[in-house]
Image 1 (cartoon, protein in one colour):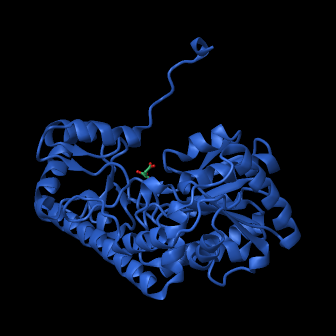
Image 2 (cartoon, rainbow, N blue to C red):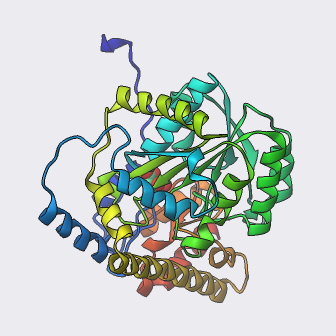
Length: 394
Ligand code: LMR
């Protein structure tokens, strides 16, 4: 049986975790996989999460099944968080899913049931896992222009011109905020224009919302999602609680669908639930119950929001420090974009040899496309890092 198989490509982002762990150098710096780290280099369990978890353990009476859509309280709380009042809830359905990736996967499967082989347009570049999920679901993948390597900003005119050419039956995958891997994001005015374009062409927006709260705050980061969803008859959202709740290994996310009306939402949702039942039957509850407890309790929610703000502000400080350190050493503004980008990542635009050099010579790990996780920058070694980056491109 298995002799028919050839070796599948490894995942480049996750492989970096192993390489970094095996590196014996004490001065190594991990700017690889997208996990938040505090000033000690630790990915902490948030205090609000710990408290919710304790409460959950104390009150849990049963571990019986919850149903295919998962934890209902979690679902309602996530809809409030993500959509607020932007769309009539009669048109919305939500199913808890294993992480942002699981949410993307079930929604891609849903698209393929509705339009077998439809084309999903992803930003150029996009998160490395988008293509495999789409292709594995039977869909085609094409790109729309997004990142300008010269300015390290969004080439918006080209992006919009490409979106304007799409039509009903096409799918546009958008990063709701904190673009991965580039860190370059749309302004509110640009979101307005994207929403108008989608409303005009009838292409289906599919929003990957994996970093809500990591850019400029929950409300600011939700602007684009709410704007788009309120402008069009149908849309999809893949939400992740991995980063903003620090629940990475609990695999907690949600697949959200917005249909033309309530009857269409029911039919579409029946297909979504059928996909889930045939894949993993029902989602695990642990992370969902933690998020439900936090979002439904005013005090815990305030504590979570404060912790999220602290993480966000730390990343902004690190961005400003790295940009300043490079500016001081190079006497140029070439890397000032690091301070302007938002979210966990910035795409530095270094050649592959520079990325290899940084790893071999300095123990600095980043993905092969030169994406850095800014949360991994050690605050007391920003100067060393700036020096290493400059010497790699000299
Ligand atoms: C990343 O982009 O590094 C994260 O989203 C982790 C992952 O699963 O790739």
